[in-house]
Image 1 (cartoon, one colour):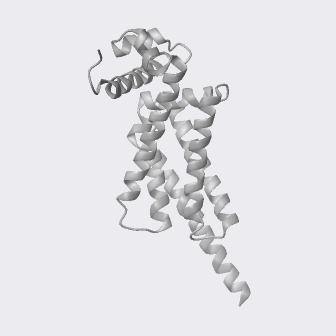
Image 2 (image 1 turned 90 degrees about the vertical axis):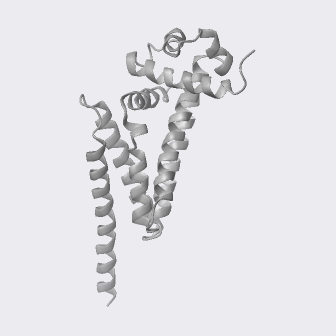
Image 3 (image 1 turned 30 degrees about the vertical axis):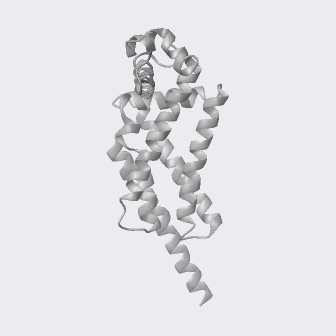
Length: 207
């Protein structure tokens, strides 16, 4: 009989083993047997807790998304400044948190991005994540600019974050999170400054 409280521990163990296997050989070569070896358990345990490899892959992606949301949440809760700039900055910081940029996490993200084009369950999770990022950015930008401009700014910054992450994750030396954060913050400041210049021009024309 399994020990009481063992299931959450075992599930986390298997999720970490999945990420380690993907880091080692990629998603295509990540088999149930390889994951089981990394976790030090029998392959049957994976079927018991997740119903098979696909269920474990979905749980692994959900865990990475949970880590991402938690990283953003922690940074936003710690803010002393409630300005839109501060909140958007916290979103940037969370997206380049260490839980998202380490080797296993980065390679797992890349594998899921590629696989989401062929696996509906992963595509749904990816879509939810994309919409969440866009909605949060759009809400904050809407506090300082008209809605149409806020939408464009949110799309631009979301693309910047994803692009920096993707290029960094694919680089031989790995993702330089500090540089990525700097570039994303710089782009954010340019977006806000551009809006400020447009406002000043509109005021000048009306006068």
